Amino acid sequence: MVKACILSVSGPVLLPAEAALFRAEHPWGVILMGRSCLSRMQVRRLVADIWDATGRETLIFIDQEGGRVARLKAPEWPLFPRGADYAAVHSADPEKGREAAWLGHRLIASELAGLSIHADCSPVVDLSVPGAHDIIGDRAFGTEPVAIADLAAAALKGLADGGVAGVIKHIPGHGRAYADSHLELPRVTAGDNELAKDFDAFARVAHAPMAMTAHISYDAFDAGKAATVSRIMIQDVIRGRIGFDGLLMTDDLGMKALGGTLTERADASIAAGCDVLLHCSGFLKDPAEILAEMTEVAKAAPVLKGKAEARAAAADAIGRRSEPFEAAKGWRRFHDLFPQLEAMA
Image (cartoon, rainbow, N blue to C red; front, side, top):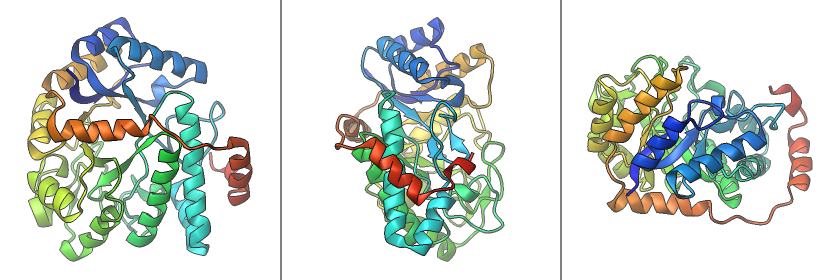
């Protein structure tokens, strides 16, 4: 019996109480935050301990976009470009841009798979919108949906070719937010005509195995209610208009954009149509507080079944296969494409 949730770990080792929670609740996945990633050997040991606690090779997630969102940090791990850097290459030469996005994410996949991490919360498919909050900003692949989707599709293939399932985010579009959803609920007042661009970018990569919701209110559709807990946004827009039929996970339930208790947030997300609950405890430092929050989310999570279970199995299967790849050759070409890479810390 697997629960429809992705939980986290409070530090670089799996604490006995966390192992007990995993044994009791059987989360579908576990996500590693920066606090849990110090060295290659340490991460491999942590993953092995997670698998021992869950009794299976549980899918391990991470946020490794490149640029400022990278849980695996230099100098232990290589630097990777921002979305905006791929966009610049693509703007000058679309074919080279696609090559760069595929290769960069194939190299990321090599790093992740070597740690037994087979799911990456990347790529970002949000538009970069001038004047909006910079929570997205240079993480985006640009301002136009066709170019963004071109790069995102190449990124997804690069990850999948390396045995890593990608998670497109933040569906149906976070780029127009004028606030940080970690701190409050952003309200997007743009009308249907403007939002059509955001939706179009995601529709072009609707084949992605997984997507992460946006904790944003789209007032033209369901005012005052975050997409994560809005049946209108999930059923009518994400599943219907965008056409995404992969596994839909929430953004972090611990973010302050969502009101109420964690249990209430979990219940509302599942009721709206999310397949899996994500909880990272990103705001907390105390392991006891993190454990308490994870326990509440795990208890609220339903058993993974039906369409959600089938979607989860399809995403999980990507990590069971990979294409041959010469990493040293790939790195040489990547540095040809991004000679400034060392300056991108």
